[in-house]
Amino acid sequence: MPDRRSADDHDHATCIEDALAEAETICAERGARLTELRRRVLELVWTSHEPVGAYDILSRLGGDGRRAAPPTVYRALEFLLEQGLVHRIESLNAFIGCASPKAPHSGQFLLCTACGTATEIADAGIQAALVKAAGLAGFRPGHVTIEVKGLCRRCAGGAAAEPHAHAH
Amino acid sequence: MPDRRSADDHDHATCIEDALAEAETICAERGARLTELRRRVLELVWTSHEPVGAYDILSRLGGDGRRAAPPTVYRALEFLLEQGLVHRIESLNAFIGCASPKAPHSGQFLLCTACGTATEIADAGIQAALVKAAGLAGFRPGHVTIEVKGLCRRCAGGAAAEPHAHAH
DNA sequence: GGCTGATACGCTACAATATAGCGATCGAGG
DNA sequence: CCTCGATCGCTATATTGTAGCGTATCAGCC
Image 1 (cartoon, rainbow over the protein chains, first blue to last red):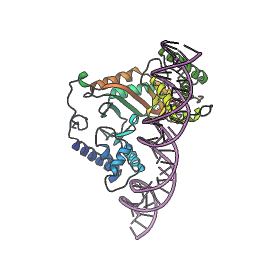
Image 2: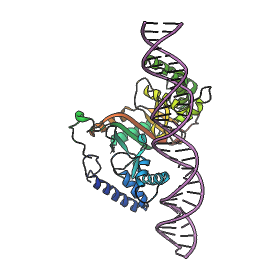
Image 3: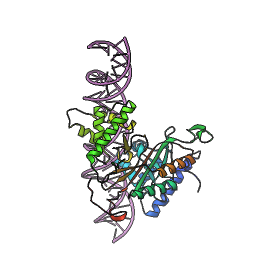
Image 4: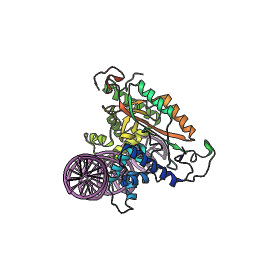
């Protein structure tokens, strides 16, 4: 599978198209109704690789003919969350498209405080350490929130790797 | 050191007293001003081992003679966060006393969805896995948010350990 | 003691995020 | 066509968080 959602240099139009197409497939398989509204909200969430606030989505929805109010957006987001098509970033009160929606999961996010980009990772080591630690405490884990604020490779400059232009 | 903040059966009055005494010590060492208001807010945060909302604190502040408004509470909380005396639980928009405030750190929390109790852990394995994963992505980590929702030992029943009454 | 500058606080107003509830509409299946 | 449940539009309101400004308080200094 191409690394279409790496948040590095890429053709973002294709990135969005792929995400929407995958969402269509997944919903069709599950018998879930990806309505026009929900599809439009998902598209708006995928506008960039930065988490998007519900009210940002709301204001952009106003553009087309249909009217919109907060519940409209929140209900669509609730559906997308249930289907695992988007994640909620708790520390930002915002939403972002899921990088691999086929298998539902709790996301792990690297949030750059300089450029705002969110990168989803799925590190088995973190997951294993967390499950082990929870087990030691007799805790039965459900949804896990992991959000790391810091500087991404390009915003951190040459500290961790060669710098290169931000072309997103 | 006694495990005074284990969120298990314990004398919570002592628990609060210890937390306040430690806060006094820490602030004195740092030259930070733990004013009467800030001390009172910290005490209210420590009322239980469940995360407390800012407006809950606000309403309880009204009890004594002084009047209070949202900024009063948020400013006190901001101070306490800076000093590492409390943590913010992002997924609940709430606050909880820090279990080991001497060394500032990002907390790891086990949040029971049944009884509401938050347990702070400090697992080196999780931290290490996270730093390693961030490094692989060229990401320079700053503040880390780790919050696990699930069932604590007693609320999970006999699944992970012998059940016993909730006496907190 | 009295001055002074910085910090902390009280307060009003408002911004940002999220939900309750109700009626209208749509769509699949009989 | 009809019915029933899911979806949506809409108003109102709840919850969480900040801006900004004037006053009070405190530590350090003369």
